Image: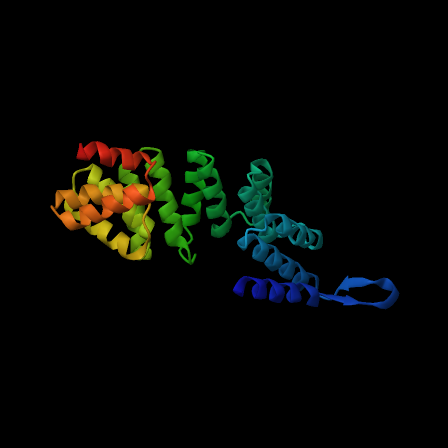
Amino acid sequence: MFKPVVAIWILSLALTGCVTTGDQGRKPADPQAARDAYIQLGLGYMQQGETDRAKAPLSEALKLDPSSASAHTALALVYQQEGEYPSAEKHFRSALRVEGDDPRILNNYGAFLLSQERFDEALEHFEKASTDTLYSERSRVFENLGLTHRMMGNTEQAKVSFERALRLNSRHPRSMLELARLEFQKQNYVPAWDYYRRFEQLSGQNAASLWLGVQLARRFEDHNRAASYALQLRRLYPSSAEARALKESES
């Protein structure tokens, strides 16, 4: 019941940005307030998965302020969710033309580039975003840097970035899992197990994390945990490559 209430409240904000003036019709009482209300309305729809409905208010925001970096970024995220990648990129670039040093936009665009496997470009934008020491989500930027380096095969740089993310925010399960995987690959089983145990206290599991848990628990002869992870892997992800690897390891 919470989501519809939020959407209605945001809609009321959008309506307060306009007034009726007799024969002249509806005009914005405060264009900036109306713009921001339209952006909030669009973001509200996007967060509920209603990307079709999100585009109309965000387009209205851009009619009121064509240079709104926030509106362009929100539209970029909407198009990215819809798989309309050329449109998403166009709006990301429009946002950066207005606010080229905004770490939020740089990080979002970097994540878009990473999803497109444009690793060098993603790295460039994440590195630029990471230099803003006042950015409240800076730890996320370093996590994204770590993911990019890992996908490029730069394991040492990936490790440094994930460790930096955890120094800024010690409750990032993704960074913990990535470090557990990196340490396991280097046969550093003690730190790998430590990172993994911290990860599972903060996050749900997927096929890859459960298979890593099985392997680590076996290394430390923790038979109960190994059996528990294996049972979850077989039950929740029976068709996964990890489940097949588990079956092969037991034969």
